[in-house]
Length: 162
Image (cartoon, rainbow, N blue to C red; front, side):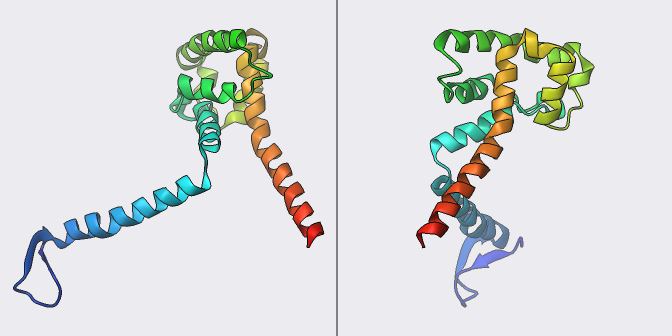
């Protein structure tokens, strides 16, 4: 892979780059760009924001993916649940909660997923102390179920039309 990449069949025409470089730049990066474009075509901004917000609440690895801005953006997609005042309050709750979860209560450090996070919030009574975070966690747990239900309904409607 370290040998000079040759252009065409002629061994005299040297490109000045190795086969490894050619493979990375011309082949691998092209494939990555195509995959990235495919993902962009399939997932709009709202879907991407929802997914990133859900990932941000994931407690795995001591909330390693926590991102307050992404979590706040997720909440903004629920205007009937989160008014401007509640969004401000959610911001305060997130600030204090993440410090508590990462530094004060070791039970939050080894959680496997958002379901375990919701259960531990109830056990520790944080669902009462941080009700807006708990609401967002519940909504996050509902997104996959709601999405599946809607997809099934549309599939059923399409089947009846045909």
